[in-house]
Length: 632
Figure 1: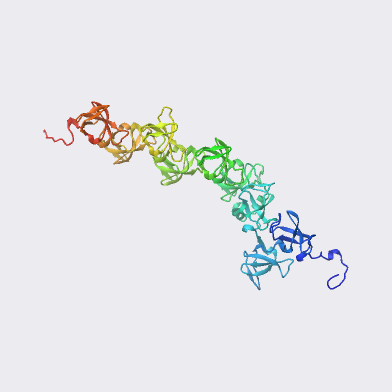
Figure 2: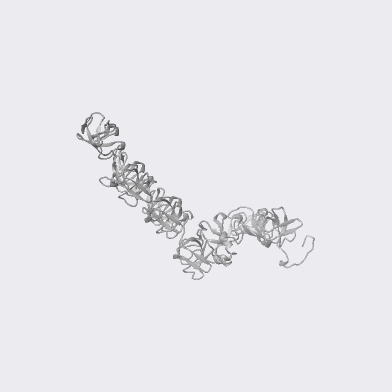
């Protein structure tokens, strides 16, 4: 019996069930407007029937993660044609025009409800230009949370687990639509053959892969994405889809070439032999099937497995301790779900997970980025030349063979590939390994003590910041970390940087000339010959000399062997005495007071005096300022 009082016999299929509260019907597809239990806003469900407790006001719905939920009609809304719901953001795929206005391809709009024209097949959308239009579902596409769209290629930027399945960082996947649960916050993606509900923050758009599908240069064509979607996460070797790798070989293929050191991305198994080979896409858009041994994994921070590193901090945990400056090796990617961690092995902590910024790369020969080096011989290449003795700076690992070479910048020649044997490290304050030094002032530590004037040798770089490791002569030949400012270089023959010298011979070459008696200044050690040191003379920029080729000029212009007369009164001391007018001989400089000279007198073997306390006696017994008469 109907409302017009007509009574009719009907088959069950010829009528719907009684309208439920809010005009809903059994079997209607609805979306939740609220969070309740395990159901969140946007979850998709089906109307099961009236509520048994309050059938006049409530309905029962079944959602994916929960059997039955009792809801008020206003707590859900209908699913519109094409699976859309009110509030969805859509992008127009066509150009349309009607009496209300026009919509262009790419315009964004919002689904506002059922169409008034054909509610079974169309939806009503309001676009940003305030045009309201009835439109077919296939004329628009859904904009998902984070601005993603169906068909976008993405990479996972963090490790994800749902309790039963794990997704490794770097995996490549494809957006296939809105999440079946929590549609407003998550996206449904397929990685390999498995679907994951992803938050937008957990994925990044892979523009290079999306563009490669339409680019003939890539060598893949449209099959690239289809291929990735059908391969598992793990591929031969230790690599995952999306891993960044570095080529270890030079290869020529139909699609182009790959050189040693070029970076690429693992995109799946090889179609030639999926059990042994991997497929990689390189930055030059060349796709190559490679054996895992032909590439190496690039880890966070640009590090690679088996790289030597130095720890820049003190690190302590329950398993052990790593001191600042400790040397270790990179052994792989972190097991923790964090893309910023590396696994390193140190002597006292064999498996440490640490952030790359707390490590420093050690290059062949123990060199580090930023080190100042001095080249040992002339180097000539296609890009230019560097003369022996020039200073340069270490700028990074080699692009040719990182186990033997590293790159340096020199004046006029950048990115020069050199070996550790080609250069010598310049330590803080210009020190070089092997430099003889003398202690300036007294120093006492828990284990050792040094006195002013003690001699030692520079051993190399200290593990403590910018200090220099120095071995000082002591009974047990101990090592002490010393600041360069409190040590003084001692060169062959006992000379020191800054000493004034007088040349004993004559030297002539293309660089200049030095005449006997010319005065010069000691610059430092000769990195090519430990028995020589470098001096600068007025007409010769830098000259390498042996100790016996120069003579030390002492304070006051005195030289060793000069005969002097004491003119500063009488001196009495427990070690001897010197009277006014006594004659003596200059025997050297005072190691403790560089402004004094040491003289030997008949009754005083070693007397330290200022230059103005004595007077030079010239040949024939003359003195400066003597009044003389010409005898010829």
